[in-house]
Image 1 (tube, rainbow, N blue to C red):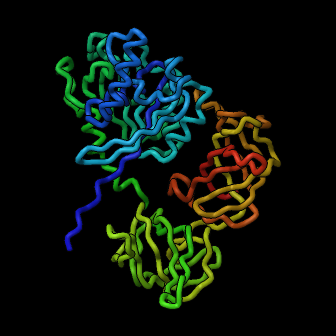
Image 2: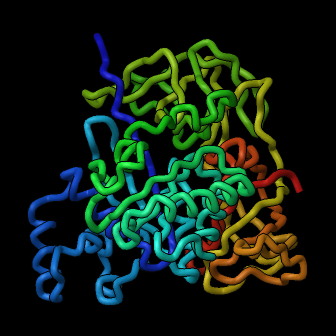
Image 3: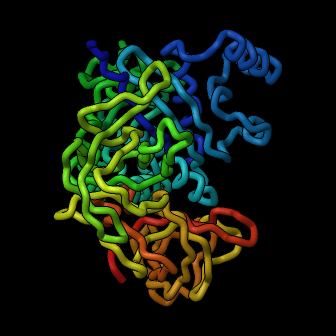
Length: 427
C-alpha cells in the first residue's frame, strides 16, 4: 500500500534584543498564515482596543503571561504550533533580556533554525551578537537574520546592506554555516508571509517561504547509528511469550533488519531481527529501516540483558563510553555552580549522578573572553566544566550529534533542572 510521506516538522526559535519585535513577528506569521482561531484574534483585538492601541497588537498572540502583557516584554519561552501544506512548525519565542539567557538556551536547544531579529534603526547590538553566539554554541544549523522595522528607515536598501555586511563578518567568526538575511516589517507584514511592494530591491524569499523550503533532512547525523533504549517491552501474556522488544527514538544513523549491532555498555554483539513502528491503526507493523527522528521498537536476534539507558549502535562505530568528560554548560540554577557540586545527570535515556570536578572557565559571550579564574557559575552564565559520573555515559561530542552530546543536571533536593550541557569530549 502506498504511504504518503509525513509532512516534515521544523523546530525554530526567535531571539533578539528587547523591542526588536520578536513577538510581533511571530504574531504576524500566525495571523497571515491563518494559523490562529477567530476567538484568539477577537481577544487580541479586544485587549488592544481597551489598551488604546490603534491596531491589534499581534505580539499578544505569544506574550501569554500577564506580566509580559503588562510590561510589553517576553519573559518566558512561549511555544506555538502552526502548519502550512508544506511543513509543520514548532516555534519558541525566547526572551531578549540578558537575565533571561537561560530561557533562550532552553527554547533554542532543539531548534533546526533560529531567527535573530535586528532593529533596522539600531543596527547590530551587543544582544544581537550574544544571541548569534548562543545559536552557534548550540550548533543550530540554520540562522535567519531578520532586519525588522524597515518601514521606520524608509525601506532603505543601504541600511539593510550595512547590517547584512556586519552580520556576515560575525557569522564567519562564529562558524555559522548557513545564514540568510531578510528585510522585513513585522508590524505591516512586509516580506513575512507576503512579498513587500516597498522593497523591490530585495529579490530573496519571504520569511515563511524560507521556513517552508530550507533543507533540514541532511542536518541529522545519518552515519552513526545511535539508539538509546527508552523502554523494554516484555511479554504480557502466554500468547506473546516470545515477544521482547526495545522501544526508543533513533537519534543517529539508519537501522535495518539483519544489521550487526552492539549493546552498550555491556559490549555484547548481536543483530537486528526486525524493526516495528506503530501504524495509523495503532498496531505495530514491521518496517524495512529506521532513521532519525523515528520512534520504533527494535527486536534483537538474541535474548540479551538490555535495560533502559543502554544504547544500541554498530560494532565498528561506537560512541565514547566514559565516566569523565568536559562540557560547556549554561547554568540555569538560582544557586551558583561550584566545584565538587553534586547533581543528578540525565543523558539521552540514562540517569546517573555526577560531581563537578573543576571549572575551566566562565565565558563572556559578548567579548569571547574566557575567565579562567572563575570559581563558580551563576544563573545565565556559560562556562566549561569537567564532570565525573557514577555510571558510564555513552556520548558523542555535541558538534557530532546534538542528541547524544547533550545532557541536563538536576538538583536532587529540589528536582529543579540547573544546567543544560553540551559535551566537548573526554576530560
